[in-house]
Length: 298
Image (cartoon, rainbow, N blue to C red; front, side, top):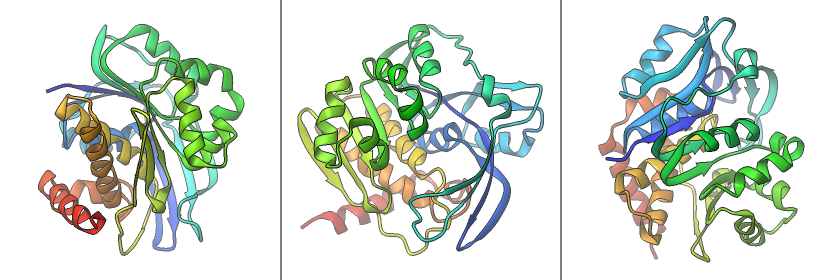
């Protein structure tokens, strides 16, 4: 089975939503991605944490048998983020960000190649550096955010020339392309380099581009959205995990992968942090996927 390498953040979050408040909980783009992807395929995580990183957070990743040989521990504090959700649960108000050891993070690459690579939300300069160091056999996927689009645009455009699959949200897609219409945004992003694009729309599902065709899927309806943090990274993890499991890129697998990503993300939002993902098994995902098939057929 093909292995996925993910490079991103491992963080300590403090989150408040209409359902309560969680202080010092486990977060980070690479954490959510790797935990979700590991339901489908082996994952190696490359990230950095400080000396204050709680041992029980490491155990959370180890319970999924994620390869943590690339998780560096450096002198200083772990990246911390504090946010609040109210009203529009698709968008968090960032109350505090402390980059700490993540500010000077330079990924240490100890292997020459990998099957699948996911460049999570980090500086495009670092993403490009990783691409120069590792040969990817099957698929390069990446994420980004508004800050990099606005402040590291040229570097990001250089990265996109080498990316097969871009996974971003609707606000980022509009900022990146200058297009308000997401269909036009998909086509414009395709002209930048990626042949496959998924634009996440939060509670409104996703719209995707593959082989010149457009595909759209709603979000899975959940009763209570406790914490949307990490939903996008979980989506990417479920999606790319499934693609690595099938190890064959075609339109059927691509569309099915989006459905798997949607289902995995629907579990993430039902609890704070990684709590809900820790409760489920692959069988739980398959059961919800079958329900999803039924409610999206006509």
